[in-house]
Length: 477
Image 1 (cartoon, rainbow, N blue to C red):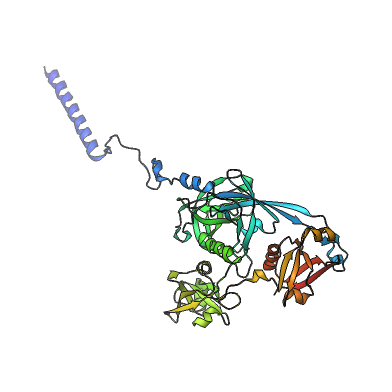
Image 2 (cartoon, rainbow, N blue to C red; image 1 turned 120 degrees about the horizontal axis):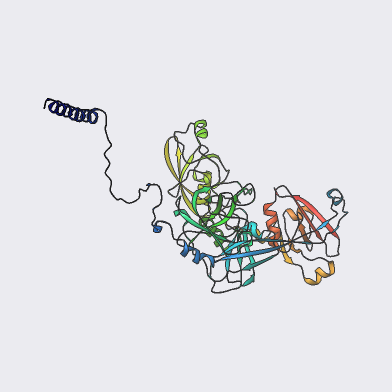
């Protein structure tokens, strides 16, 4: 009996000790994490797109609208001229007629009206003697060059057709960074190609146009653009034309991330001028400007980094006449803020000589406003028609009979010769210009384009009515 009581007491002590040990462990050592388990939706990060596809832009409508209004442009240029192949011998007249060579080019264009007006880049058609336009429905047309503007790299063509699909103008000024756009064109001769991207920057100046009156205020996008896209459409999500694709930033010649388009604000004005006057009526403010940077602000003790700095005011120019001075900082044009040369140029490019703009400047810490009457490159407010009498000469086509007699395939004949560069250089009435700066001249526009883009000297080659060859050299500045 004693033994049973002894074992029972021992058992109770062991059990009690076990419970005591378990209590002590859970109290002081074991701290289990409490987890509530329940069925939930998969966790998603806030910065990733949801599974709902409606959050992505629908670009199908814009693609369908624009693809039929973008054309394929094919050009032919003739290269050749009077040369011995040795520049030294050329100076002494030892020259012979080189066989002409055909150079082909291609690009894109955009139909801007149902009656066949097509906008493209100047560099797409520059120097071309034959221009062919192929529509998206495979119809082909010969195109006529209405006019071109090297300063903006815009050209206008015309084909004889009606009821064509065309793109309406959008508002490039309303484009926002990050907004989706489409680039439509014919890269690498792959017709009717559509690519998409976003607006990466606006009012971008990349320095590709060396003309002294050049205007660069490109829309920068990351839509893929390659050779052949030049002259094609940049459209917004509504299928409206907001720019003309012009250039790419590349070290290889192919797309490397960024492309650039001339904004429609500039294109629209150029087209209207070419239609109405045959050449662009460029309005000039009459200032030399610099974008205000931190370095420039420090140099000129400017209190704020804003606007564009007036480094010089042109003598007898529009700005000086209105009261602007060297050292002024232009901050607004027509109540629109300007913070770069490109922004200012884009705004002014939308006006013609004789029109007035309100210019707001910072001077000595305070704002002043001036009403400026814009002028043309000649310093007045009239319409410029330099193309009608280039360098003092009027021209006419060379007849087929005269071409056959003189054994020439192209050229333009001096119809009238007045005071100017050509007369001073020794050219006479009746002389036929066949080549200028080693480029063949088929029509007056060919001659005009070379003259406008020339720097320094001009070499004019041609033939007299009696068959005597001659060449003349003169400067354009």
